[in-house]
Amino acid sequence: MSRAKAWTLDALAAGVRGGDRRALARAISLVEDRDPLAYDVVRELYPSTGSAYVVGLTGPPGVGKSSLIGAIVRHVRERGQTVGVISVDPSSPFTQGALLGDRIRLSDHFLDPGVFIRSMGTRGHLGGLAEATLQAALLLDAAGKDLVLLETVGAGQSEVEVIGIADTVLLVLMPGSGDSVQALKAGIMEIPDVIAINKMDHPAAKTMLNEVRSILSLDREREWRPPIVLTEAVRGENVPELWEKVEEHRAFLESGGQLEERRRRNLAGEVFAAATSRAKAHLQAEVAETPELRALLERVQSRELDPLSAVRAILEQVYGIDSPNSADADGR
Ligand code: GDP
Image (cartoon, rainbow, N blue to C red):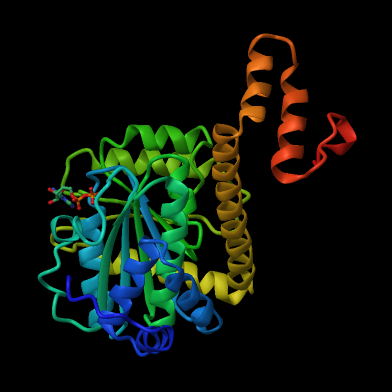
């Protein structure tokens, strides 16, 4: 890694476009480092993205996501598809593949040029991770991968952003994932497109299946009813069946023109999420660094100034926007 060759924009873009592993690895590292060259490369390659199918895989820790990815990669490779995997762990400060050897059994795929696997951890804040994931996924797409798998631990809002670009969202549960089931039931967690209940060798798997099934049956409006598949990820049992459901979802989206619509929505969402996250970081930095703005907060704290007058003053100063405190101007 220390023999870092200085890549030019052209060489890097051409390398990624040609599917060159080293170029791809380098470009993703630059993305993680927020190197200006990374933004240039993605800008250059973006018009040639959109051919990869993106599957987001999420679920609580320990349910078998990495094992399932190993099995899925094997399955799609047997069918001749190329695949890129980005494994995102928002709780981990590690980056650049530190985790990947541990979490995804690479041995099977190590020498296979049709597979590219990369882990990413938080370097800095979560917003940065979502941005980096988006860029990395675009690079894999531009590199000609047929399939991009984005994997992340289900940890609330963060994973929504990370897998926000997915065409199909696959939720992985196992017997004992009660919290996730509650979150689905309460409508806190969005209904995924496909559900895998992994560790089907566990005696409580069937109970879990029935529980999830009954929650989903409450929602009759949905045009696409999310299928639930029992799997055993270590031996790869039922993985072809699971993948068939992902492909059925894809066919469903494609047949009604919904894929296009979903991608448009996803991309707009990603732009909004990244802009919001940057705007928030900017606001925090400005307030921290500007005595005048901090004084406004202090005046609120000492009850000299009401909170929303402070909000107006801060927004005016930081962003130059006028946000009147009235009902017809709140933008909704
Ligand atoms: P992740 O944290 O969701 O990525 O989960 P891992 O793939 O790392 O799996 C967590 C543990 O569960 C590992 O010890 C796996 O070997 C084990 N495991 C994964 N899938 C299965 C399964 O289908 N059955 C059983 N019995 N164990 C599994």
